[in-house]
Amino acid sequence: MTEVLQMSGIFFNSCFSEYLKKLKKALINFSSPQTEPKIIRKSDRQGNSYFQVYDPHNRHYATFNSEREIRIWLERSHY
Image 1: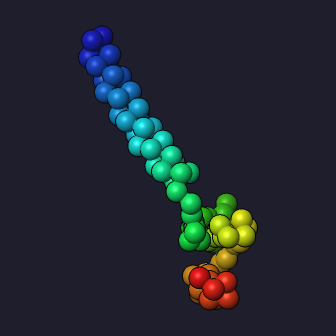
Image 2: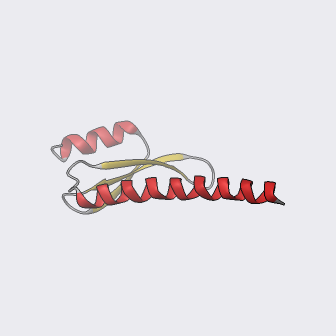
């Protein structure tokens, strides 16, 4: 029984530590103004990859199917 409690304590500490790291990162991101576009690679239900781009200047999201499309958009957006 004490072994289970020790294991759950280790698991809790690990989860709590991970939570604090994520919270710290979120606070840093929130407090510093973002000027660069943020690009996230995602997958749809069929497993096809696509990219979601957030433009902080216009507060707009755009979706692209390739890195080439993103580069063209970036060039046209004067980044």
